[in-house]
Each structure stands twice: as C-alpha cells, then as structure tokens.
Image 1: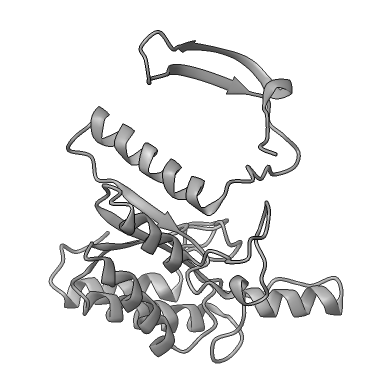
Image 2: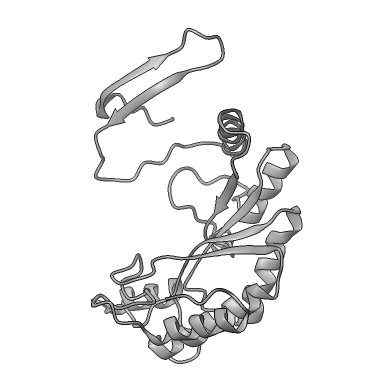
Length: 240
C-alpha cells in the first residue's frame, strides 16, 4: 500500500480547478525513518516521465537530468532493494534507464552517482561506457572518495564497510585518494560523452567524512594539487 502523508502534513495550498493539473505547495513534518512509496517499476518510469514533462513545460530551455545511484547495480544479484517491495525483476540503474528510454521520456542528460568504487579503473570505465549507450551526455552527479577508513565497532560492521565502501590498492589515504582522482578525471576527460563531474563535497567534513579535496582547516590535500595540475595541463583557466 502506498504511503499516505496525512499525519505529517503541516500546511499547504493546492489548486485543482484546471482538469488534469494540480499546482500549489505542501509542507510536511520530517520523519524519523525513511519512507518507501511502494511503486511498481511501471509507476517509477511513469513518475519520471511526469516530472520531466512538468520541467519541460515550465522551462523549455532547462537541462533535465535523470539521475541514478548504485551505478553497478550489485544489489540486484541478492536481490535487495533499499526500501519498498522486492519484485521478481529487480531494477538495476541500467534497466531503469532502458525502460525510461523505451517510454520516450524527454530528458537531456544521464546522471550517475559514484561512491567508493572499489574496482579496477578498467571496470569503472566499462560501466560508464554502458551509460553512454542512451545517446545522451553523461554527468557524474556525485562522486566521493575518502582519505581514511571509517572505524568499525564490530567485525560485522567492518565487513559491511569493506563490502560497500571497499578498498582500492592500499588502504585509503590522501595519496590514494589523489591517485584515484587523477586516474578517474583523466579517463573521463578522454571521453567526450562525459561532460561534467561533481565531487561531493569539495571540503571536509564532506558527505563522506574525509572525502573533500580540502581539509576542514582550509588547507588543500594532495588530490587538490593533482587536479589543479591536470586542469592546467588541459589548458583550462588556472584555478585559484
């Protein structure tokens, strides 16, 4: 059954006087737990189409990005999903995009989130190549690599951290982060279909606690200097 937000609704104004169209705003009380909407795959694709249509109608010049995370789709092998029902066919990000494309959803950019890809750079390059097959530019919308491992309170948690976040070459450090970033940016720069990369976040404390290019005190890490050197070598305007 779909989630109903009545108990969390604080205020709002909606106008449904125009047939087939609802406009307005709603404000909700935050919830302690995340909510799964229980959508079918068909509903997920349909709501993507509705959102893209609404954006295009409001601003025909807008760049519309359909964004996916868990880019390798490992969870489908279990099968597992983060929230909601598990169907016989678990959507991987690529399967979802295939259905979106088949439904002729009007969008401009494929967005890919990439965190802690503990794989060889060749494997990362191959999965990114898969996302180019939709004939649209690819934006790396979120990307983060730590400069140190997270402490674990138990062997079970340590196993989970290593499985999800993984290791790449030696344990994560400022040098390993810089190596990874230099290799990744170089690979992406060589692919014209990858048009943008957003590192999340630029400074610590980042989404991944030690994932910034700059420490909390504002001093740059090795990855900052490596990326700056790359940009200079590619003829970009000199960053500060």
